[in-house]
Length: 64
Image (tube, helix red, strand yellow):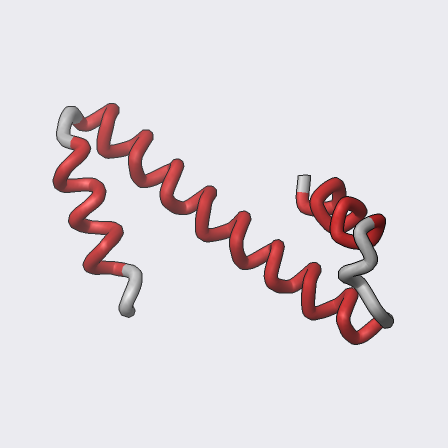
């Protein structure tokens, strides 16, 4: 998925050189990791029966 987004950026001329390529790939990796953590937390909270507690836990855990 991140490779598809990267190729979209590349086709629009947003990737200038190799150092820019590494920075963009790193940023996309961090974004997808954060999204996966949120999805996993919400899924676990849903299985336990309380979405609010899961969201509050994640919101409190992010600064750590």
